[in-house]
Length: 393
Image (cartoon, rainbow, N blue to C red; front, side, top):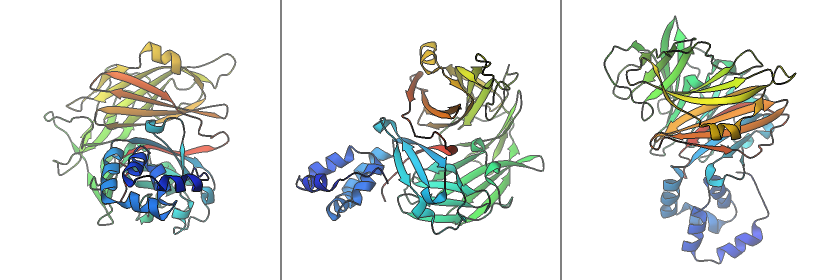
């Protein structure tokens, strides 16, 4: 973990304090800071490796949600940028170039696909491989090609894939993605334990059954038309994944993906059985390629999976604060423990801006947070993902 300073004098003074007090100080920090401290000296490493400290630290870390952003840059300088509202004044820099050295990508820029707990997936376009990086265990693992064969970075759709790690902290994970094969939705699952893929054709769902949003269910978006979406749901109690075709009652002109110029006035951000609709208006002055954010709505999958139901919209007083011009926008969305989080990333004439929105389904309350500058001017965004559950081994 980066963000180094000259910590030697402070470290010597801190070592003179009682161990219990040092542990309490360390527990007030976020995990990237704790991992960096572990490298400072042997005394700190011993304290942080203590079983009681690890248990207490992981108890706090599992409830912390991170936003990770990856800039497109030379592989030798590969850095993940991490942000959490527990330390809302700055981004953490996490160098990963050394971790990726065992895998030869011939100097190619990588694309950041997904994250869950300590595991991060990266894909290459030329080599057409996916690798799994464990930031805490400091390991890198090649994932064999899926049954569809090697895939370029443009083949991986953010809303059509999900990484799920074992809650035990073992480092095992499953990588899900859904795709149309022969005009039928198919679920592909890679299991790190067996190092193999399994593909299963999704079944059409009947009129019975309840599909609660979020939780242990995995919802993957396959395709979206003007009025109807196609999702694949994987549920622990079912042998086969299920096809869902939710419809909007009145949704003309809805479009999925990036928002370019004045061609599109609504952007959809999908995840975990929810969709966030970002509305905008164009033709700002003489700048036809610039639009202004005007509204954000949250919709959720109905319990029978047949329609999208309106959940809430960002209130006007918040919209007046976050209203801003942009040329292109993208986002990611995740639900965890009844909290829906969405990151909206926009670019206006070369300047990047990020906004973090969250909605508490229990209190029916919105929160927003402008993120500090990630120093991205002149860079291209090469992946964004939420992740929770970073833990010490």
